[in-house]
Length: 123
Image (cartoon, rainbow, N blue to C red; front, side, top):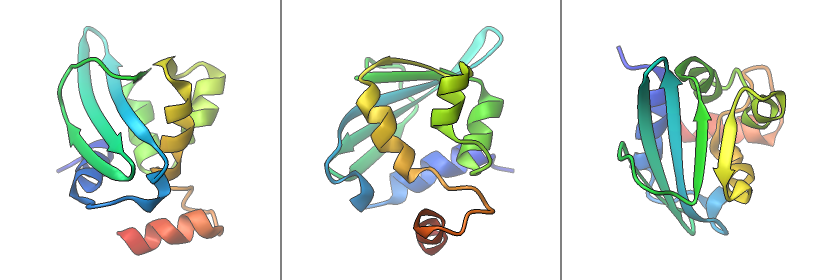
């Protein structure tokens, strides 16, 4: 069974172009820490073109959190910016990329706004 985190990153990698990120460019590395083990996901954004792999490389922005919290974010049950403000997530580097990338995470299953509707169409 594939978890929400893996599905999220695989879906990003399958997209040819993400219009919500047309003005974004840079690399983000997601470091998911659980005890002594860290899983890395590297996301490259180039004006809407996305590529994902699991390399532990330098990135413009590094986001650190637990696998459990990221799983909630990938499933749309948690908001990344709220987690950051609570101190449940760390960011080093270019924080503007965090704000831009937040757009591609699924919204709350209870949301009725345009963001939720757009993610329903993508799936």
